[in-house]
Amino acid sequence: MSHTPARSAGWTTRKDEPTVKVILQKDVRGQGKKGQLMEVSDGYARNYLLPRKLAVEANADNVNRMKLEEKARKAREAAEKAEAEKTAEQLKTSVVKLTAKAGTGGRLFGAVTTKEISEGLKAQFGLDVAKTKMVQDEPIKAFGTYQIKCKLGYEVTGTVYVVVSEAK
Image (cartoon, rainbow, N blue to C red; front, side, top):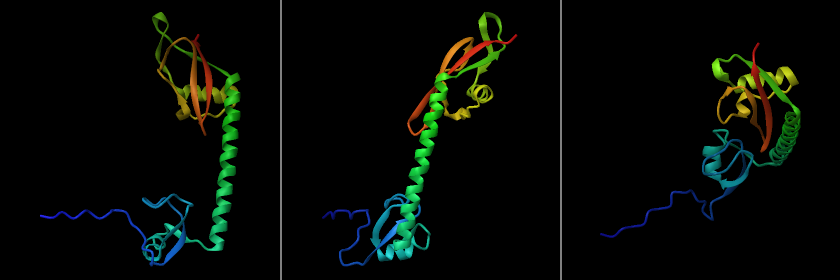
């Protein structure tokens, strides 16, 4: 019995087949990411990508629009990163003071959560840091001073200092 090798699973364009340039509007599995300029076979573009609004033809207007959108996206990301860095600087100087009820031995009833820390930051310093961005290694269940890391996005992290004291 002779064994024939399996054909390759990936799509390839033939050399004599006409191709067309398209700009992807969404991520297309096996092809590319959104906003990418690609050269694909004419039939693939006409029968699959264009009718499903996954791509648009790469004419002069669409190429210019893609460049403008890329420029706007980069500017927006730069502004968001600058805002995150500014927030990280403000976090360095702020110490959040929280009060909690405790039982015997200084153990808290329940725990201090990231939600309470986030609300304390907003009330005491006007800083709006989402509770989901705070990384708490273990729950705060006793009085004292703690450091909570905040992942602010764009590889920017800050540290919040939290002081938990007894409620009178």
